[in-house]
Length: 258
Image 1: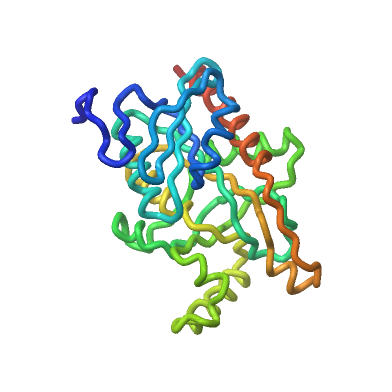
Image 2: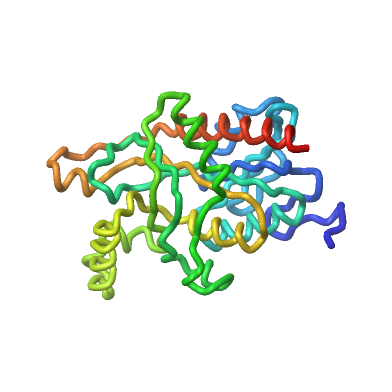
């Protein structure tokens, strides 16, 4: 049982500092940009990779917290947010492409994640699937459609090594990295990132809701197969707007249930 005045060890927040609804970018630099979409948003805390702001949507307290890069820090942040009352999470991030048909700028909404991360294995065996909350996925899809943003639903790969993906040929385990990448493509995976599988697994264990929306920044598979040249999209506002509008609808529906 958490004392209401007890600060969490890593995020340095206590009960009341955050809302039950939390938006989770990886990059601390994106937190204030996302918080600008909230009403009366204020900075709460900064510690390590965790930058936290809290404001309001539809009259409900909503927080934004960065998780840093990769599964370990994302899991710690999610655990501590849950301990102080949060129960609904939407990750806002970026990814690379696996499906060559997808253009950079597409919003990817994962329906599941390939568990290449190490953190989730310390929660449940790898046979347990990493899947998001269906209600949140549905809300993200509806919000993206309403806003007119191109989106794709499907499986994403979640790895622990950024450069293992981007330059596998120089790794001693290149045989495994390259063969599995081809397997993901053949099986229909659409994107690659680093946090969703961990967040989905931890959320399942904690019995909380979690989903993800990702901006497809670059698709090297498309560049290679279609000779498009380098195309990179970095404007993450569509992903933010999709997540915020989805969360508005979730909050409204939660109020009806109450």
